[in-house]
Image 1: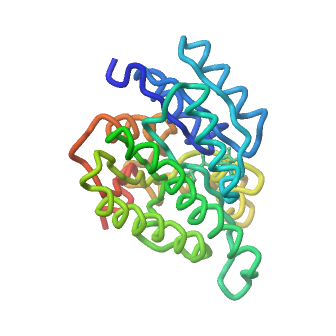
Image 2: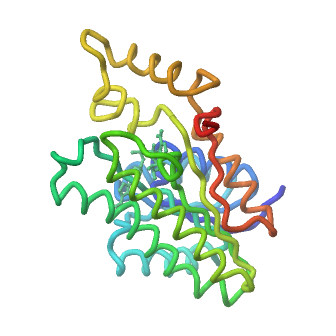
Length: 259
Ligand SMILES: NC(=O)c1ccc[n+]([C@@H]2O[C@H](COP(=O)([O-])OP(=O)(O)OC[C@H]3O[C@@H](n4cnc5c(N)ncnc54)[C@H](O)[C@@H]3O)[C@@H](O)[C@H]2O)c1
């Protein structure tokens, strides 16, 4: 197995893309710290990983709080015996034109999506430097490559993640640590397919959420079908096993960013 015995940590691991990334890393041989601000979801995914024969712990952490993030790394190292791969995936969205966007909405999205990634990277670097080996994988978005209306704040946060990833990769290039970003396209997680998700918010008049979801897949994605959480897990495994790939922001988007 490609990553046998490596220890991975995945934030936002309790559902959605994070869950797919956790499962693919576990299939590749990793023991996993499943981190989420919703504890029961983290526990459920950690139990699934244990059922696959790997070690797993669930940690309730808000990635915007430095004390909690620092403790997350400490507990992972203590309980799983190390930390090799950090997937900084937790993220939030809100959907609003700029003129209606409140400062609170701006701060919330920027805090989780940008500060959260910064704090999680800051916390893992000293440990990875000591072992001269590490893989940092940040979840950005295709909104880190192109802008979307009503998502200017979210787009700004994901461009920031891509820029941060590029700069940090250069900063750490001689340390044995690689830093890359996953840029997902459209996946039917709660971000898209749920009460407060994009398919609901971007419904046309008279359309059901299901019809809106189908229309968006067909109109926005050249391949016509959404990607899956497991697709993102496959890219995470690729980054984790690729020593000479660093500073990249790779889209898994069915061709959405082809132009
Ligand atoms: N779903 C998509 O189409 C899509 C597309 C591009 C990028 N993304 C990105 O993928 C990542 C995962 O999104 P998803 O679609 O799985 O959404 P999701 O809402 O299903 O999952 C996000 C997870 O992050 C957790 N989380 C939120 N805030 C947190 C915090 N402060 N601390 C710790 N955990 C927190 C949530 O509890 C949840 O488990 C995000 O960074 C998102 O921006 C998603």
